[in-house]
Image 1 (spheres, rainbow, N blue to C red):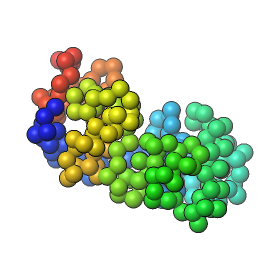
Image 2: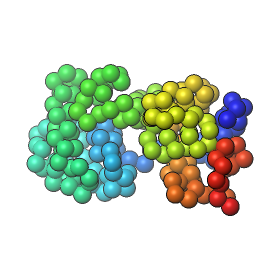
Image 3: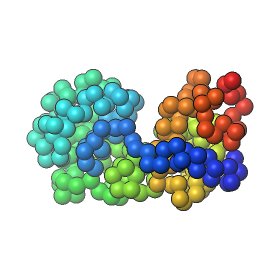
Length: 210
């Protein structure tokens, strides 16, 4: 995809949705962090069913630690891998209290040292909580980047690096959400909704649906 086409690609997505937002329920950087940790190998919808009650009971690291692993597990037992996630949430809450004064750090290296937090989770938190122009490559972004020809790569890290290079600065803050939403609702995995696609003419995908 040419640079002029990439600019047009994001211009169209911006025109349709000028201020895209993530779909995970949260009320603060901490609850966002917890929600993103819970969303690993789970859907946002599934996470959003469990977290309002959890966050009503514990919306700070101190309250979460006081709640304890067993009670956290009870709140999130409808989410996949809930045992490990409950353990990670308690552990990361303890670290936030002990090392960061109970605050979520605005630093990728510090974030990825937290239990259950990888580069993708850190990028989501930096983008949504702190307004950093980061790109968290999930399955949707990975698919869209490769399928369109915008930023092909065989690993999420390679796709992230490629997107960082080609996305114009004016679009970087919201690019993460535009690409996720496009992949989630239009450029879906099994049968992409090409007739409904705003950027169909810019896309290099050979097997477009009629």
